Length: 316
Image (cartoon, rainbow, N blue to C red; front, side, top):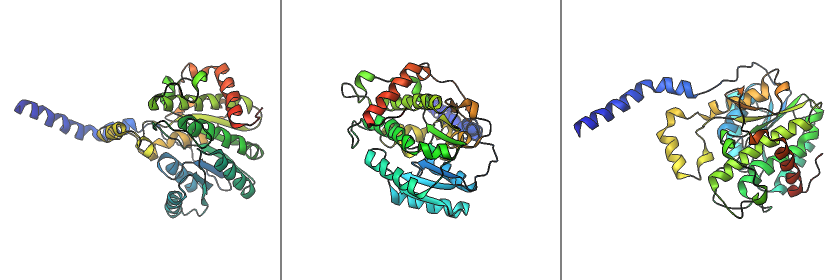
C-alpha cells in the first residue's frame, strides 16, 4: 500500500514538474502575421464565448469592425463589452443569430446587408456537440442543421457582399473528428440510427466538404475559403457530455486554452499568401492531411446539391 502511494505521489510530482513543457507542446501553432485590419469588416458566429470570442478579440485588436453573431445576445453584449475595453476598439457589435432557425439566419443577413457595404472575413465558428437527439426549427437533425446547414445558408446569403469586398475569406471551423465522419445520404437526419458522438463527426466532415466545394465554385472571384481544426480546446462545446467535461478537467495540461484554439482560425483569416490553398484543411496554423472521405469530389458536390434542396435555395 505504501509503495503504491509512493509511486502515485511520484507520478503526480513528475506531472507537476513537466506540466509547463507539456502545455507548451500541446499549445500548437501560433498565428504570426502582423497584418492590421483598419477599415475591414468581420463576421464571426458564436463569438460570445470560447474560440470565437478570442478570435473576435484578436481581430478587434488589429482594428477590424467585428460583428459577434450569436444566439444569446446578453452573453454576446458581455463579451463585446469586455473586448472593447481590452482592445480599445469601439467597433465590436453584437447581432442576433440562431443557426438552428433559418428565419433567424435570413433576418441576420438582411440586417447586416442593410448595415454594411463590405464584408472581408466570415468565420463560421459556432457549433453544437454531442446533443441528445433533437431537431431544429426547420426539422433538421441539430448537428447537421446548426454545424453545416446553418452556416451553408449564412455563407450563401452573404456571399455577394464578400465578392464585392474581395480579397475576402471564409473560414469554416471543423475538427479532426471529421476523419471518422460519414455523409449518410440515406439517413442524413439520423432518423433511423442516432449516435450523438457520430452525429457531431458527420457534421464536421460536412464542414470540410463544404469548404472544398465552395473553393471550387469561388475560383476567380477573389474569395477564398479554408477549413480549420482548432485542436482539443477547453470550451463550453462539451457541455452536453459529462464524461468529456470530466476528461477535460483531468487532462487540462493537454488541452488548449480558447486563445490557443483560436490561432488557426486567425492564421486562415489573416496570413498572406494562402490564396493558392483555398479549399484546404488546416491545423496548428499549417495545411494538414484530411480524410479520404473529405477529398471525395463527388460526395462534396452531392452534399452541396442536397443542402440546397433542404434549404430551398439555388446556388450555382
